[in-house]
Length: 226
Figure (tube, rainbow, N blue to C red):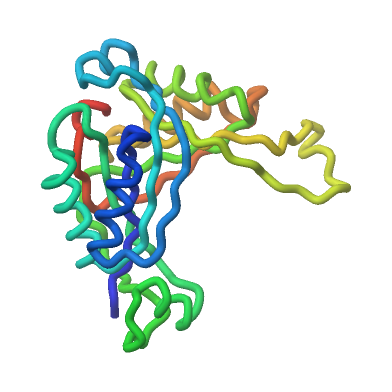
C-alpha cells in the first residue's frame, strides 16, 4: 500500500509563499495555511536570529516520496537546516477516508487503496498537541517550559458544541480554543504531557488536554527548540 504523510512547515510569515511554491513544485495536492505564533524564549529567539514570534504553519498531504522532496526543497531553497529559518516535520497518516479522497490527495488516479501502509514509525520525535481554552496557551507553555520544553507554536482554533450543551461536568465550555504544538524528543514526551496536565489540564480554568502523534522526519531547528 501507499504511505501517506502530512507535512508541517512552520516559518516566518514572509516565507509562506515560498513554502507553498516548493510544495506545489514537489507534487503536493492539498495545502493549508494557518497564522500562528511562536513561544520560544527571548534568549532562544535572539540566538536563532528571529526578531519576532509571528509565524505561519503550512500543511501538505502527500506520498512518502512527495514528503521527501518537500523536505529536501526546504533545506536547499530556504536553508531550513540553518538556525532561524524554520522547522518542518512529517506525521504519517493512519487512514484516508475513501478511495476518491485518496486519489485526490495523491494526485494519482491509479491509487487503489484508501488505507495507508501500517508500519512502525522510525523516529525520535513526537508532536504534542494541546487543546486549551483561548487565552490559556501561555499556561500550557509555562508548564511545558518547567518540564524542559524550549518552545512551541500556538494556533488559534474554535471548538464546537450542541446548543443545549452549556457545560461539561458543570464547567462552562468556551468555543474559542488555542492549539499548542510542541515538537518533543520521544524520551521526554510523558514528562511534558504530565506537566501540562498538572499545570493546565482539565482541572484548571483552561480545561486543556493533550495527545501526541509520532513524527517520522524532521528538518530545521528541532534540536534547539526542544
